[in-house]
Length: 286
Image 1 (cartoon, rainbow, N blue to C red):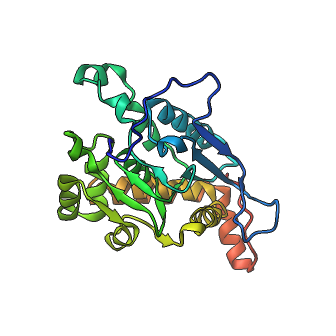
Image 2: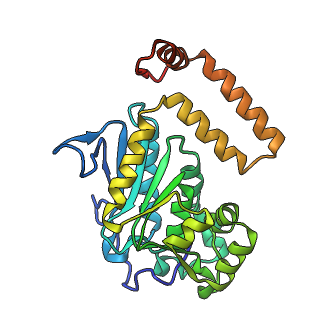
């Protein structure tokens, strides 16, 4: 999760009360919406280290995951957009000065990488709104989300090899699943970056939009998801994630069970009744 584009400034202690992550729930509505409106069911989470290109320190990761777990446990929250403060970077990598003195023993005993496992367990859909650099840990964070809305100026990559290490927070696994073995090998073993358009063509990102429209596009997508029945959305997300982690036979079995279970929900009854009655459904999340 390291990266050559991370800040070269000396690390500073986290001040008491410092906010490395900012949460807005409900999120502000896209610019095209009416003034002062919000996006129902959508939260906006912003990484707040613009002076370090939002480099992912251990404390920032802990704050981010804690915020996401809180939102995940809040039923009115039905989708989350994650972005980085400023226009230069989503997250330019890990905090290199924090990682440089580490050893196998200290990393193992410290347990700080467990935050990535907690992130993977979040059930609410996560959308990364990426402007500028998403490198090393920043690319791994974007790939840990369920969808990526990329600005035309976005750059993705896993340049850890240039620092004498390799991706350590999911880069070798998620990038390979997203774009295939041959492309992942070339990117990781050379450390080069790829543009937003290349990332889109490779299947890494959901969409590419003009830079200034990135956050609005992500919020609009999140709003469309938040308008869907929440139990079905979570079940569908879990089944899609499982497709990367199980055999086809196991995935099909899990999908069928989840499908059957949704027929015991009020939302299923409401959705099918609304369809036959030719009216908009009203989702209760039950």
